[in-house]
Length: 439
Image 1 (spheres, helix red, strand yellow):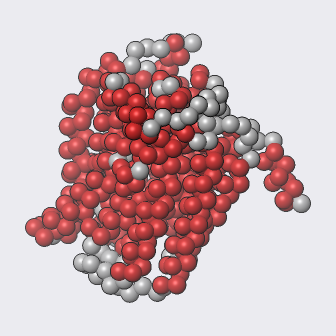
Image 2 (cartoon, one colour):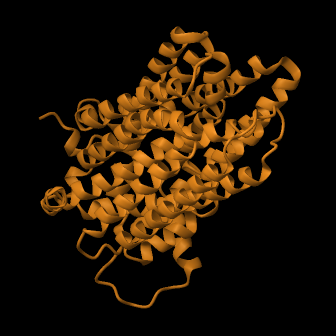
Image 3 (cartoon, helix red, strand yellow):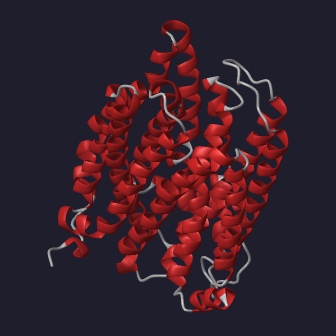
């Protein structure tokens, strides 16, 4: 009976909502992973540099694999690529969960190095594999969305997609992670494997040809020529080029700050995994709200003004962490700051992604998107490594409590410099378009 109800419900889902549901499931896994990867690393070591290596392993593929992924996305059916990526992630999460379960229980982690190098290396390898699949999946998904909706509905569709992503990633996923970790360190990875498998089932039900140009059946050109064409388009567009630089600087600073957040929760606030889940959930609520109102905000304020306000909002999160104290008052302050930060982040992403989807030719979308994200997201692992090295260096000079806040001083400085340099550019970057006119 239950199987029949589920089958009937899936049969009546529109392609867009089937796509959004699949993305929601993968983001449920990503939300659980945000907490689980960092928490498992802190159970093996307290060394900030080694802790940074696990999220670096997740994000490094954006720098290494982004450009090849763009060529692949423009050459093959994007639905099939999503299926392959989610299946690979499902298998890898299952392998990581089994490995952690077999290695339990863990001893008290050392302040420097790790006494379980084998399991640490295996976790890092699984993280790299997940990261490679995520690069391919996210690029294919962003370039596939315009085939599911009319161009005039891109902001609305992206807003709904981002809302679901934030509900599952920063709210449901992170809350579930705290509960799952309390039961077993291996359990979050098993749940992730199941979520990815369900996503495969949903995407498999989409019908159609989702290649970049279904009508073109000619032989392919050399991949270097195709890659140069995508990079040349990005570099030839001042708006795309500068948005990529801006997003890269934001991701550099943001990921640098996130490296020590788990340690701040544990050592500065004196709280457990549910506190970290609460911070992520607060950010998720901000993202949900932004996704629901983004099209109205853009119509009322215009794209340029929205991006300026989003850029100013980046200052809030590092400021509240630097001002926060121990216990619940500090947690509440950080939650408020993260809510504001993620509200602005979703508005920024919705405007920038919709602009790319609207202004990049479909046959180039995968390659230009990958070149854009090479810098925009590829800066994230550099920020993580910088934070790990900075924290270790400051710890030797000024002690661990001061060192844990060093990435937030770095992030605040990067945001201030970025605002000063690019504020005027954003104010004139986007002319008023018909869909922003008063109605």
